[in-house]
Length: 210
Image (spheres, one colour):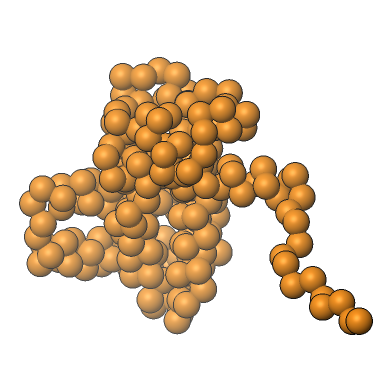
């Protein structure tokens, strides 16, 4: 008698199970912050959404804040990846400014960008959160600035100019995203994008002219 082959999926290793649980917790944390806000993101709510117990959470994260910081790191990594993907479609130097501006604006409008926005507000009065968030935010600033520097038409700009443009665009479009929740104004937003792109084009040309 021939025994049928075992079609059941292979058992996951302990490391794979651990990584899967951490991923579920981080995703649940992001979803919770986006949907109900940082102040209501409790351990109970996160565990309920992730489908794990409180004990499982604290086996992987010492505190709620450790999980929040891991979530901030994850969102930063996703944002950098998306900026890199958008940058790859840059058609040429004459379009670089608009690609940069649109990419950063799009990043501020992603649902998960609300994670950063919520944490920024909370960090204003929470010194420990502010301190713990700083490395992830600095990494995002550094990597996105490096990405801008690699685009056609930007490589000859002074490094400090590129960093300033990255900060300016991030601040402008983060504020736009927050205000747009209360007072959406698509026409003004498109005019702002055109205005910022025009400023960048003129700056890029003047800074690299002999």
